[in-house]
Length: 107
Length: 118
Image (cartoon, rainbow over all chains, first blue to last red; front, side, top):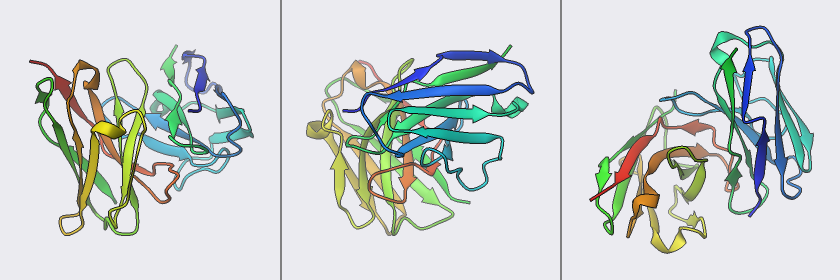
């Protein structure tokens, strides 16, 4: 199965700062990579269904880039509600797999 | 607004069968795919399997021998059964929707913790 690696494991930033989260795949997944936001006790939220396309209702400060094996989720200016864990997920090959997550916490 | 809610026992004994149900409200279960995903404490997310509203299924090979997912369209529900559980099956279990077979998950439940313990 395809293994996803996310870095850093934790990102400590202040509101207003820019966050760049990395996801790397063990083999090419094309553009078939999704990003999710997850807060404790809540349902995970789909941000990016396919590498760079935002899901409906997702603010423009969230953007995705990359293809093949290297992907980045960028949050241009962190809002207080953006502090959460972010997961990538590949949908290129069975079974679908997730990265271990990057926690964005308040510095 | 579509909502998914997991329900079922929070404690299951080793060797028994874990059973969970996901109730879909605010929309129809028809025409979509529905998955179960789990997250053991301190670990990552693992996709368990999906069912299409028509009843076709696909499972993660790592769990395939122990998993059954079923659907009841009349109740707008789908269910998970995981047999012969061990402590390694202790996890938060999520249900989720996806619009295509190869999934990205556009709606999720909040998750329910199932602990496997004597």
